[in-house]
Image (cartoon, rainbow, N blue to C red; front, side, top):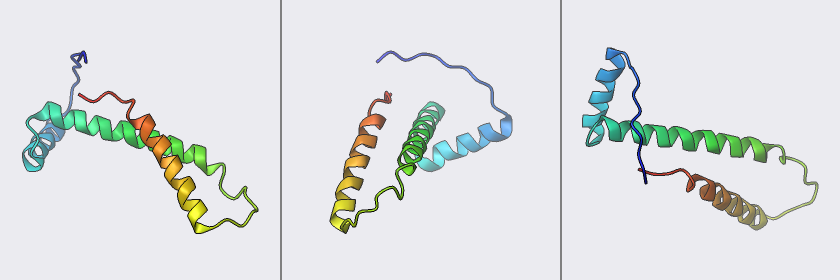
Length: 91
């Protein structure tokens, strides 16, 4: 995978917090922490979008369904969500 250099500015207070977090969490360097943080945020945004898409289906079924059926559908939905997350390139 090709990586690109991205440059941005951050205030000194936040940078100090980043450095503390790098050490406390065992990251090798700032870059690794920033990549992990960005991945988490991208995944969070995707999950929220998926949950919004699913929420429109809430309450539309008037049939009685079993807990087993609910669990099966839940597993299928989360399998699909996981497939979407795998499309995010990992460094």
